[in-house]
Amino acid sequence: MSDEERPEGAAPAETGSEPAPLPSGRGLGALVAGFLVPGLGHVFLGRVGRGVAFLVLILTSAGIGLSLEGNLYRMTPGQPLTYLATLGSMGMGLPYFILRWGTGYQGSVTAVGYEYGTAFLLTAGLMNLLLLLDVWDIARGRKS
Amino acid sequence: MPVDHFLLMVLYALLVSVFFALLWRRERRARIKLFLQLFVGMVGGALLLAWLMYPFPGGPPAPIP
View 1 (spheres, rainbow over the protein chains, first blue to last red):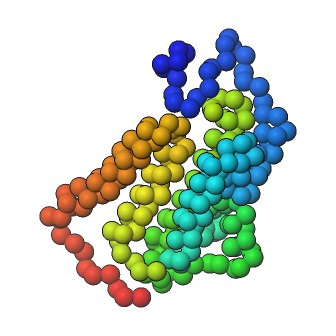
View 2: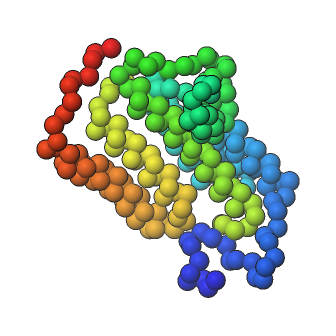
């Protein structure tokens, strides 16, 4: 792939059919840190500004969802989609577990902003899952 | 927190647009360009969809919980 064809931010592709090297222990640590605290994976890899910006964005999204009393998904037997939604929400890492088991947050289905709040909370988790993919690519040297 | 449908939609579009602009682009100008594309696309698309749906009859009013 030439430089012109390469997506912006992507590192040069490795030559031949050799796969990119697997992330080192530091890279795996960044993945775990990034899962637990949004943006911390980027900070671990030296992208401090970006990491802090992502942390602010994700916490803002989660905070708006909480203030609207949205649903923090949990698995409901017989409702397969709640399994997917729960995994998505869990993507926000520690905030999810603190809210669910630390504070017992449940949301309020009768709140006016319930549906909106649910969307914001779910989005916060999905954003962090995408960040983990970015951390993985940075750790493998595929992105800058 | 006040529940204003349009305000919440704009807020959501703002957060998502900034997020993807930071995630997918590294250059400042490219980030601003992508942010504007996403933000205008989401807000403008929603308004356009709302305008297209305007002639369709609405259902009964939602019950007050």
